[in-house]
Image (cartoon, rainbow, N blue to C red; front, side, top):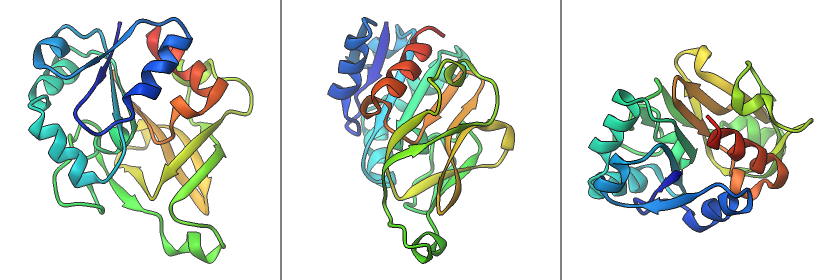
Length: 204
């Protein structure tokens, strides 16, 4: 069973529909009791840094998520803002992040605009695996995912980088440390590539 965390910052319906499509049981959870029983967790997120983290704190779920992920080592996948909040801080806001993966979130620089590209980065982009991992090894050839974002994750430890993409310059689009995974793109909007990634996560 995949538990999709509802703390007011994610596109829950699309994520659950993807699991339904690949016949993987999933449920949307919003209580401490439900998360305490979780075997795998999805933390989806859209919107701004401070708003998302404030919602996470108000939900009362932060402490139980810390316990499930850091102590019990339950697999967790953060999506978009749900990936960014895994970091320690962000140029977008003032609140501290979860800090589960050391690093910070930064805005795309002026070099992107100088190359005639736009911020936010929107649309399909090719991604590149930087190391062997169950989530990347099962992807179809020439994997491409759908992005909508103005900020990206900068890892303090290069070994936490799982995949990169390019928008003006190379940026980190997926991270992984132990049982903690995060993707900047939207697998729920990325057709066969997203389906493959979500299926691999469900089989961890």
